[in-house]
Length: 114
Image 1 (cartoon, one colour):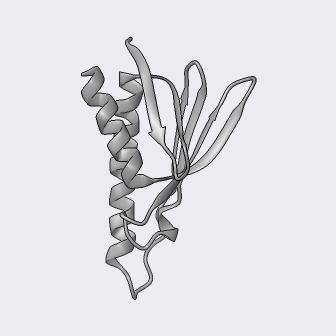
Image 2: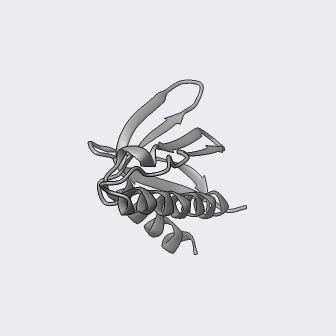
């Protein structure tokens, strides 16, 4: 399994860590499901939307990496932000990132490893 460095641009700053291509594809799939949930919430503006399940993606490699997003609090997919946690036994970074930026960073990573 090939592992390369993924760099995520956060609201302020960035974080880089080792990440496998398969894990990136799994995250991409989780984000696609999240986008559907966000679109479902946005489509019912004005009415009462059925609550959508939050996205919780986790990866355990050299570091523990988690992405969380509650689609019920964002008016559109373009406004959505995710909470990102990267940690190991010595350090923990928790920060917010724009969903659109996460998708771009992931796409660039997959282009580089593919």
